[in-house]
Length: 393
Image (cartoon, rainbow, N blue to C red; front, side):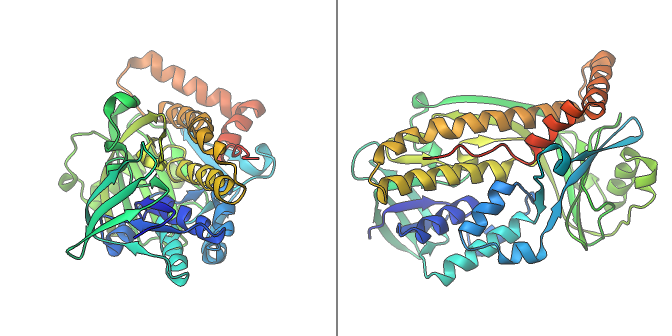
């Protein structure tokens, strides 16, 4: 078999890249270790920056998002028993975010790929990347008991933090920058109306909390918890009681509770691998970087990588300017580190650390400064809606 771009991973970044490449005439094949059903069962964040919304339009996969998604032009920060609204439209030059679940983004992109008749090998085992530092890259894998050899021009590693793509590179060729946080997020999904039509991020002496949503009838809530917490010890009743304690009383009084339909504990980390290009292999999204979910940058940061890789590949194939491929890593990393900084800052601003009363007072002072200042609110807003993509022109 042969294709132009072999894409490893069928999460939203791999699917989005494949759809964008297809629409400009660049052939691609996706190889995925898990089943289609497994990929669709992943519950992830659903706050989309304008850049990702625009990419979904460009990929021809935005119709359902525009019909069912919710445009948010603000969110709230709660601390010291008060609520301060960050008006995104006012402080970010009219920009907003779209609340639409990552699962739904994945579903829409899968449907678009299937409608186009493009090839995806689900449940593929033993994927191995060959000669990506040379001129004849390829991928071997087993699908339905049959061994396949896929020759290609380039390989896009969109297979996440634990995927084979980054692991195929010699450790001495990669610089790793990482911070693991001393807590996690306990999150539940419930078939209940959201407590607020906008997200609420809460800083409380008992720990961080977040009120989010997937739709008018589906809510997502989180509380900061210990890394060694046992999920079995967190009954629904205990979760709802703890969440109410961390929210302002007027919000807690309106909270509608119900059985959880999904519950999990996620550790938090900041992680960047440099560079992101190794010969003809390009790392994309979580394969190259992780952010804590505070600030909703994970999927959006992957989308900006996809935008860059799609455009430099288009330069190489359509415009006969392959030199742009050499700039991929530098272009991506400039934006990645800015998003890492914002996620790190938001995490430090809103979570409870065991570092003494002085640090906690400084945290409260910083929250007050940023929310009492137009300059501070503009800083938060412009980062939350997403910094501009660097042009590939």
